[in-house]
Image 1 (tube, rainbow, N blue to C red):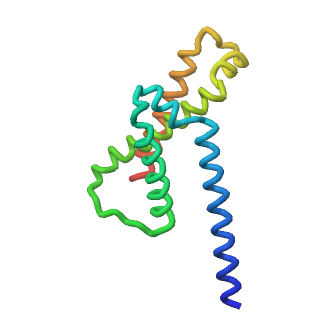
Image 2 (tube, rainbow, N blue to C red):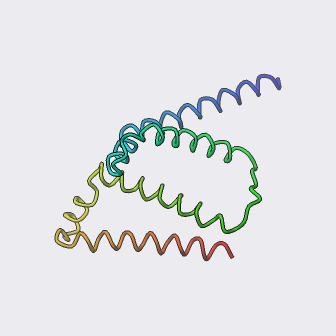
Image 3 (cartoon, rainbow, N blue to C red):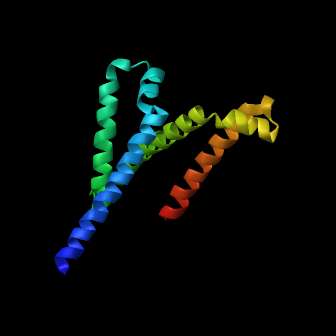
Length: 140
């Protein structure tokens, strides 16, 4: 009976991994994050580096999340790690808004077509203040 439970657990884990991995690849493909990033940074010759960075980042993130990993490093490493995480989330949000044309539609619906810069600044400042509140308030 124990073997059947293990086989079922392996099947569920494998199916879940395929679903999440397939969704992640489809998400990257539909948004075209990597080609757009190379286009914006004018570094088309480094596209393979970006692709491998995504692959290794995904593998490392999966490995860390499945294990009870503790890194014995200085607290000062939180600064660059936080910056890298912020850059990732910011680029992902920028890619979503660019692909979906969210901001022009939102500005038109709310009625602030001429003040889209104020709308952008409100979103950016809200994100920054919310992140600072989360990291400063909940760490103590």
